[in-house]
Image 1 (tube, rainbow over the protein chains, first blue to last red):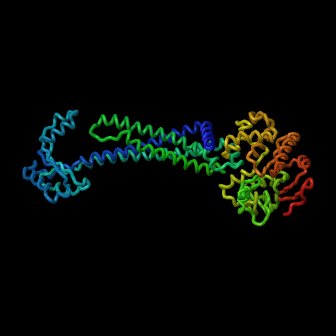
Image 2: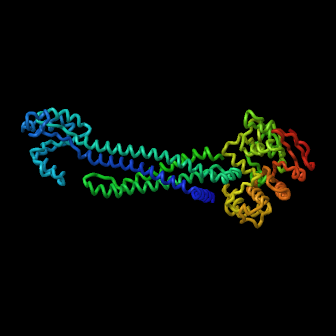
Image 3: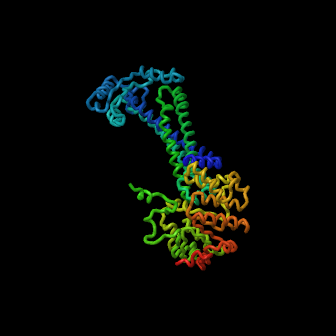
Length: 304
Length: 261
């Protein structure tokens, strides 16, 4: 009975204040969608790190005819120089860092190149002797790239030691920046949402001041007087959070999961299932913000 | 086997609102007691109440008279703890209201019904719903509401008008609804702040009859008014305020003489 009455009061408040409540729903919806987007980006970064860090290698490129770096001034790599690099890779000095390595010849390099760029006009024009031969080294700890770089980059016949992780790091830092931007937008929007909730509650309390005045007079408890207003804010924010959750899930499921995965089959993408982890978080943020701003507003504008 | 102990702990209609240990020790407690109460709203102007000491007994009917600005409304607000006294102490049912923690204030107000000059009805609710509202917000059950509201409406003389809206009623009828709402939770005290201020003399008498009936049922009634006719006709205790102080405390009809300060 008592709870039914509070709920009844809540919904009559929402009906009277409908346009404000809808604006709270929409602002919460947009702001939490940005939070959701940032969450998805972070999940995607984690996913890609896990996927790629196992596969990335340090490549030791050897000199070719066309090499222009000073270390290759003596011309293409000789057999003895190549052997020296291989010996060092197998030696106890390198053993703590090197998990495994493969030799990639110029012909193999061409094959891979043509596979990667099969849709491009470049594939036909490149020949094997333009591509460097290389040792592909998998490291025990990918962070130890600098040590390997020191060991090999000064050896004769070595053009350059390159860390593929650096390329990935660039992508990740780009994605990180995007998620920082998303979070910044979300924070601004959430501030809007909090202020809007406060204003809505204030208007609602004002439009029902007769009722609350009588409630005080006959000795209704603080809970009985304030709970309908609190619920009004929380319900509106929850509705916004549900919309944001649905949007976040749809983006993860259909855009990332279906479309992007179809476009780039080689990359590990997240899907709708991963987005579901974000849902409780979004709901919690909505409830906490709405409850907090309602309580602060009521404390100030609805004395008991 | 005896049941005496059990009977002693049961809630009776005369049970006070507050536990025994909260009451003033070693004295018979009054319904309402002001001890040297002063209230200052603004330091530069004169106090709204100045050193007021007065007691109202259980079941009394008291008129609080005086011109506008004499402190009548402040007097009522202090009892409801809408305000706190600047100095002195206000006891309601033996309890110092200034010392009540804020979460206990609703409980204090449940023991006090209030009626105003402007009725303060909810315009979008029927007569029945207006009275029922006061019970709903205290979490009373539907069955209890269905039983109590018609009884109370009969007490104030509004039987058969349950489904009317406030704007369909005369001023006197609206005030009866407000009185019904004030007493539906059976408070021990009824405060009426100029309840006949908006009503013509004949309608006012009807309202006074209702208040008198409520008083006969054991409720302490304190009515602030400046309607001389009514005060003279009723011949009850009269406390007159002037410029924040009590200038007269007379018991009409010889109930009691002076109240000891």
